[in-house]
Amino acid sequence: MEAQFWHDMWSSGVVGFHQKEMNEFMTEYWGTLNLKGQGKVLVPLCGKSLDMIWLAKQGHEVLGVELNPAALNDFLSENGLKAESVNHTHFVGHRLEGLTLLCGDFFKLTAQDCEAVKAVYDRAAIVALPPEMRQAYVTHLRSILPKGTVYLMVTMTYDQSRMSGPPFSVPEEEVRSLFADFATVERLHQVSFSRKGVPTTEQVFVIKA
Ligand SMILES: C[S@@+](CC[C@H](N)C(=O)[O-])C[C@H]1O[C@@H](n2cnc3c(N)ncnc32)[C@H](O)[C@@H]1O
Image (cartoon, rainbow, N blue to C red; front, side, top):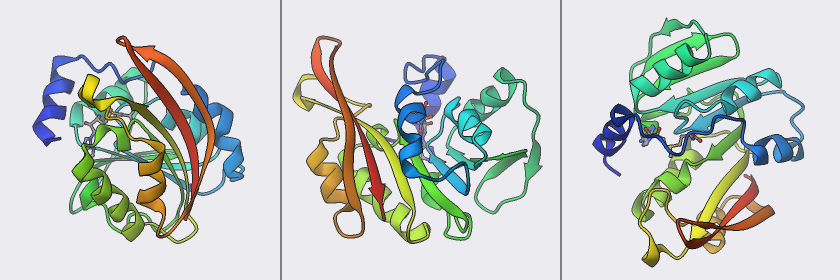
């Protein structure tokens, strides 16, 4: 997707992907990563997700990356949080206890930014990207993250010919193939439902690089 697509969505105020509660798969399955609240967690394409607050409360240092400035400003104001500015070459940064929020293009994130990252939480991130960008997304994650990083990834799959994205359909075979060269992929859970009349399955994976 072009950056403008997301900027337009945020300025329209219609952000249907945003959840007003913590993601239930995250709260249920985060423990399987066995991190015990330790280590930095990267939340790519973070929007104004409340999940970042939950992760910080577990003890993690959270690094959220988001293209749209209003999303991060909303995140701070809606949660009554105050942040300091952070200087960064490629991003406008906000810093508060337990949380660093970088506003800019995820693809500009560097290995230096991710030095202490132990885990990635991807909910509505890979599925926000069209097919040609998903390989680039995983390649970039691989290039900037320390070896041994674990991922909790929540995806969605449905008949793409019946509905356009985002969220895009990312079938399990694609998740497995994107990570096959450098990680193991285990499906922890799946649930099926009808979304706008189209049968859809949400899946939760733990991925170990
Ligand atoms: C579908 S939303 C999901 C947000 C969040 N993960 C959640 O669960 O609510 C995808 C987000 O990614 C952001 N985004 C899209 N492309 C991006 C990029 N290249 N770099 C950083 N953020 C991006 C969009 O502005 C949008 O807020």
